[in-house]
Image (cartoon, rainbow, N blue to C red; front, side, top):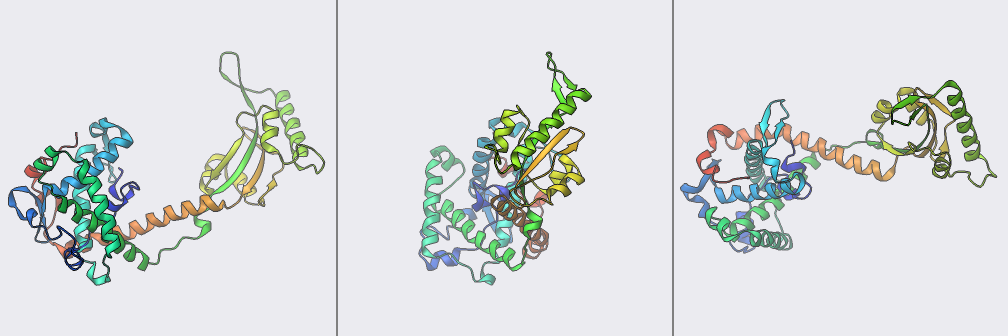
Amino acid sequence: MKSFFGNKKYNRFRRGLAFVLLICTLLSLSGCGDKEQEKTGNTVLVFAGNPISVGEVYIYAQIVKEDYEATYGKDVWNMEITLADGTQSNMEDATRKDVIDTIVRVKVLASMSRSYNIELNETELSAEQNKADIFFNRLTDVQLEKMQISESLVENVFCENALAERVYDKIVKNAGIELSDEEARITTFYDMFFSFYDEDDKGNVVTLTEDKKKEQYDKALQAYETLVSPVSEDSGDIEGLATYYNLNHSSYYSMTKEEIIKQYGSEICDELFQLDDGSYSLVTETKYGYHIFYMKYLTDPEATAERKALLTAKEEERYFASKLPAWIKSVDPKYTYVKSVNFDVYNEISFK
């Protein structure tokens, strides 16, 4: 399922919190060090000896609630989903655990900020306070009273998340994870496609006769000669020629090597990878028809860079996740979701 850590819109909640009470004191951040979450009656869980209030949990829950409903609609909480381990779960139940897992991750990173000598400067703290103010002002009086949320509590959460993002970045940077352009390669090409299939008057797909296939081949040869001709007015205009021949299934594609193999097969993939940027393949036959491929970018610079960043982020998260269980155990050896959470208090928060 979708997690906090893959959510670009709320990336401050991707990577956990860190300990900022000392920093807030040094920088005179109003409200930091708030003691109201020590009230026992509103504690959802205690992690590493620190009580976590229903108000703090609600901030996380409300952010993911807003994001999920904006993306999937308000009925998202009735969905049944398949978790990573293959088991089925209700979306609300799975998200409830996600929220607590995030906060635990948060508190683990909290214990690591000093060892990395990372703290927020006044400009960063001010920026997070502004974001916190926007979030706080969206909450109703009923929400604030029922969940016992103060402005300083919201500021603490946002400040801690900003600091934690820097801690996380430092951890994964030190891991030295690097991917090559070849591993992340996206290839962009045009497939000028003369199909072996057509539709009859009733919309049924029918296979062309051998004579019709021969006509398609002749058209493909003619198109190829036009594309590579140094004197033709249509030389190089593969999209224009596709329109001229009424080739409705011709298009540009941007694919990974694996996707090309799945779509066209290994032989076509090998042929494509022999092309230089700006060059054309010969007329190539597959079981679906005749193709002329135009190689725009064997390695599309923009698409490859985007995929490289995405794959690197996934590898960094995988690395971090592999270390997290041991870090949780070192911070709070007795913690488990089932035994440590006060569900009577947590159930005061509704996602529906």
